[in-house]
Length: 151
Image (cartoon, rainbow, N blue to C red; front, side, top):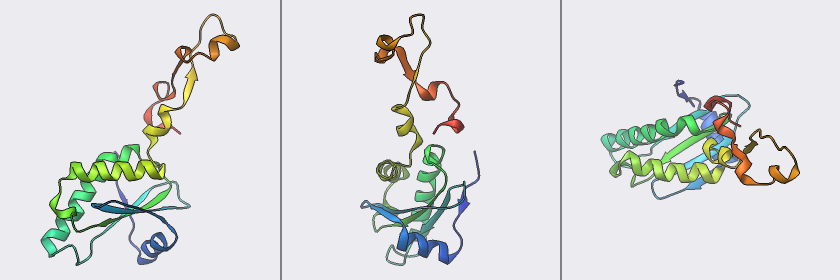
């Protein structure tokens, strides 16, 4: 698994806030912005509204763990900024993962969702227009290529 590349500069966070698209749930907010690099970068922010230092650290840990589980499915080339909400320190990472997955799916950043709709024709003896139109002669595209090569 690749190392998580972090957003470090304040300018990168500000650019994501101002020019990025936001996706909001009661647990976490995600700002998504396309970057000019081929790698995905992630930033996590927690404000003092969340609570004391212990609660802010827990919120960051929960968000980091939820994203770590989803990272192999997320398209690269985007800056993602996760902002903790008031509920974040009090929920488990599985719940945060569900919300995060819903948001990333809405943003169109999950690879698995895109691959399910791409079909690749299966070679058969009678290769004509009639057999190609039937879905039974098609296989899932992702069954032919290893995971890193999915579109």
